[in-house]
Image 1 (cartoon, rainbow, N blue to C red):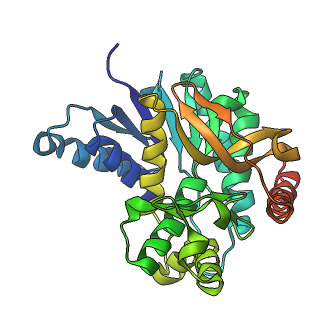
Image 2: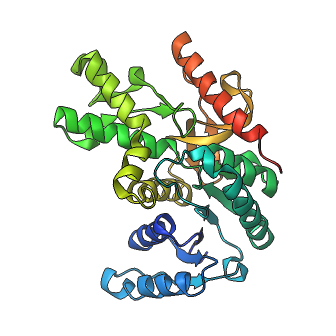
Image 3: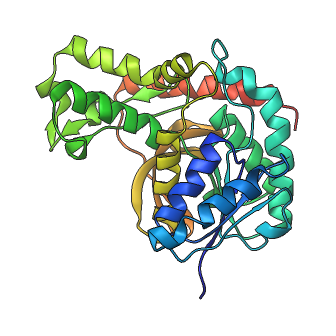
Length: 309
């Protein structure tokens, strides 16, 4: 069998932290790719030199090209320009479309059977670009967003109630942007509905902070965007696939009629296992929730329609 091979494209904060977590969890050999000479090689060597201390038998290499990535089981695309204060995820559209397109072309050439996990922003649109350019089935191309947005919501709930984050279950669907749809009705603490534990205005404040979670960090950092929580979310997805865990998580996937939406990527609950997205779960939504999800879908569709592929 041999060890699994995971390629991370983009050795910036998100990519390097993803590589770090993959090594820590000993999930497979890691290839770190970036266009900046020396950057992926230096970070890979530094990570590799940590493996004797950690007791992790994995190989870590850095490269400026894609030959090293051949026959990867999973490729994580984090390449692109991060948000700066005042920039929306949509502002990144044109620049990152070109980057994700060229990365996907190279990746597919060397790893035609890989599963692609897209992290570059604007997330849903970039997952669409990777899907269209790769020609892969939709099971093998999906985006990381819902797990991150859900994690933020879970943390805010746990903080408000002063309870363990492990007891908090939340659900955030829709686009990774201002139109995301936190589903309060499906959120609970140790099985107790959130609506039984917090007053309406507290819940609304948490929903608002969840929507603005990325922007809050961008405004604090002033250069770059979040990477600790995004990388943790990516690695949960990688682990679910490589260990065939069948985890139910919100991910951005290509919809083909589910929830009455077709032809775009949108965050919905899916089952993640060895073959990628093994099932898209259609949960019951109220009229209000469904309308919010469709508004979210239209925001993504507007972005996708402006992309020149």
